[in-house]
Image: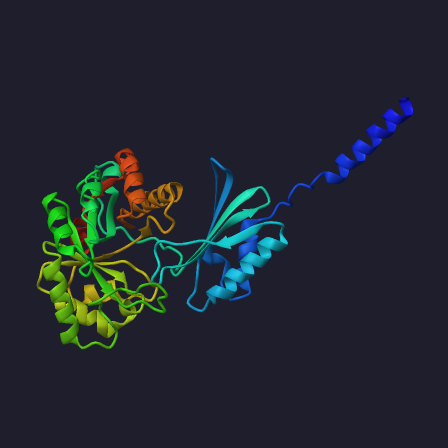
Length: 364
């Protein structure tokens, strides 16, 4: 009996040992992504790696600031293959901000870490010189952050939702949406700053496109003026204009000159959403004497609370280091909900202002 018991114990041990799964190998996220990017001529300094610990455990965010020449589809396949060969997985996932800026997103896990790779059509951030300092004020007072929520106009529901946010948070209204004029009127009644979210032609857009009345490359100056005149009439009370999509149009100097000629003398500022690193919109606006500024951070490229909080923290850090920053999000319920809980906590870190205040100070 003792011998039988011993045999049983030995067999059980051998079965247990053979069933054990070796711990996943440690894989360096930055090394894997930089190796894949190098195959396509993307320099290592265009890739940033940020690590944190979240509810699900260790999390790694890898951001690839893609050069124009990067073949996105092939790069995504390369990342998927390398993650698989490392014993993990990365799979494509949806992005909110497209039209030239958000090029790809992959989520998954490698080893014991959760990974997210964001591929953005934007050069790595560079510090912007602070144009003005305010002697004697605390850093939080001199650091100014403006927030703009895009894509309003489809539903009046957004009016009640954004009421939860400070009145300095501005909203950009599309002129070609189902209820644009009503939404603009109701938001204006809140005392909230409005922007005309002017549709502009993107590069290689695979989605629904910018819609009717967009600024397109090759249109005459008269036609562009007519489209902007109509849009301004719909979104009455707008203090400024920013581009909806526009990765092709905002990089075209003749088109941008036509836009600025159309808004010159109206007392409007121009906010360049920077949906492409080739944009000339802000530059042309300044050349024509129009107050201008540009977007520093997109808040909800990934529409998840943690991602929005992370992007908001980036915007605050930019404001503190540069003196001012502009963050753009969307009138997505989750974005509004996250901002409603987070913005009250920022008073000691940064001062929230209307974008018109930054445009006025930044004008040449």
